[in-house]
Amino acid sequence: MLKLYVLVYKGEPLDYHEYRHTALYLKLPDNQSFIMHILGTQGMFEYAQIKNKDPSAVGSLAKVVPVADISEVIGSGPIQSTVAKTLIQNGPLDLDWNCQHWVGDALSKLAEREYITVSERAEAIDRMMDACLEAMDD
Image 1 (spheres, helix red, strand yellow):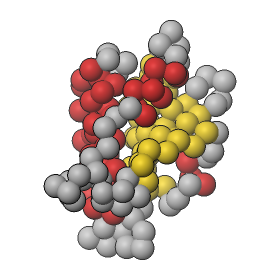
Image 2: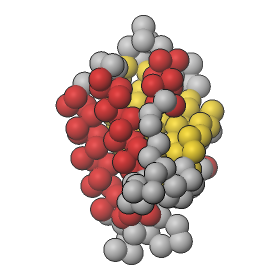
Image 3: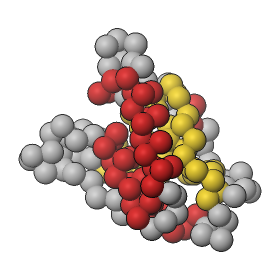
Image 4: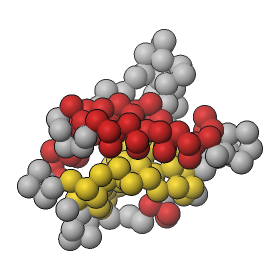
């Protein structure tokens, strides 16, 4: 089984909920892994993928939220492709949009393609937001 997670990192330099960084993490049975996220700031976000790196080495990891076990029949390619093609909101009216929204949008796309269930998506988003709201400096 492929295992999908949401990663929640502490905010830098202050740990406010809106500064908490979120990403998707796909772990394969052969121990390959992919961190999929957007980097940048409002209006300049870009998709990035990191292969075979421990999530705790990327930043100050606050929480790992399990999303779903996904059949190996689907394979990692369609999952990665769907996530990579998730729309990034970089318009002038999107100043409140961030990586937390993008993770939610990516999970919605995965649910639309039935790689995960709607309830798995909803539960993951709820738990991701709970982890964001645990920010220490709020």
